[in-house]
Image 1 (tube, helix red, strand yellow):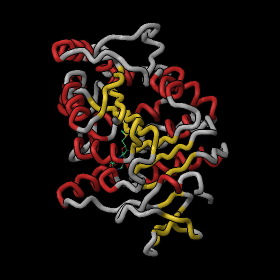
Image 2 (cartoon, rainbow, N blue to C red; image 1 turned 180 degrees about the vertical axis):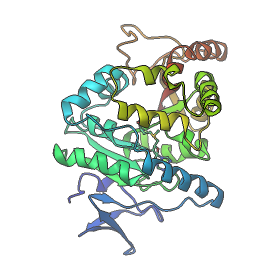
Image 3 (spheres, rainbow, N blue to C red; image 1 turned 90 degrees about the vertical axis):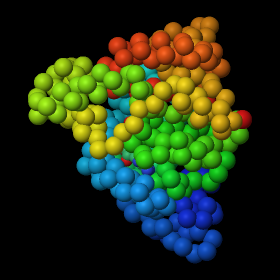
Image 4 (cartoon, protein in one colour; image 1 turned 45 degrees about the horizontal axis):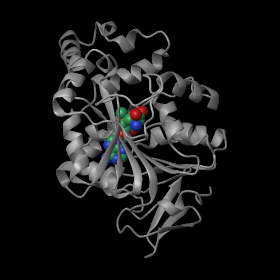
Length: 333
Ligand SMILES: C[S@@+](CC[C@H](N)C(=O)[O-])C[C@H]1O[C@@H](n2cnc3c(N)ncnc32)[C@H](O)[C@@H]1O
């Protein structure tokens, strides 16, 4: 197993010092060894706060059983490309990220996005997560299709085993809201982005998540029957096994938080990050853009708080049908 494409970006989670490959381990400058097992460096160490570590461990257990997103039927690069084409977001990311860029996806789950972005073989792409069963699915696909520029690594957002100021693009979608301190998680992620690099953050929206919250209460009261009132569970283009994984992720998740556009814009402001774009858009589109064709790394109007509130109320009826996840892209100044 050769990690030469990933090593320039990895660091010891304890000391932040560089790592070298020594046989079946990665080794820091003091000689501490981190095992590489089944192709995945085990660089996960505990979160420092005991309270937060309890939540992390609970989430690790959950995602070791619920390997999200489901991999059934994703058995070739063309299926991955087809999925990205349909979802829009993957395709827009692929169009926005330059071919020579380094990309770190934190909370990559089963690594479908990581592998998809790695189909451009001049990019260096690393998928990081704490769930080994999820990472193994990504690793299997990567090995099968010989994506040498892609690596999967086990790590914890709060003790990230990556060098500071090292990557051009950091993606973390659907993850921070499952951590005990999403803002702290954001600041940890940002440290890894180069100046002038992009951070792509996807979170549950406080307004758009409300319909799902109401359905969650209903399912609790009815013992999980009536699932068909959820639009995703009625979809004909998604395998049943993937729907089950989606249902568990959305309705049985032991820990989640909801966030507003203005809250995340404040995170950006406080940390010298310039707003670039939103999905859905938060202040209007730019010339030549359509809902099917968004330019994620082009500067967009930010809008104001009143516009954001109206937009987010509207999202309850659009993205709210699929869980209410919104994405903001920022540029590190
Ligand atoms: C809902 S899944 C999102 C997967 C993928 N990003 C996507 O959008 O399809 C959340 C992922 O975050 C990971 N995760 C949660 N807390 C984490 C932590 N502290 N460190 C690393 N990964 C974490 C979980 O293991 C899980 O795979």
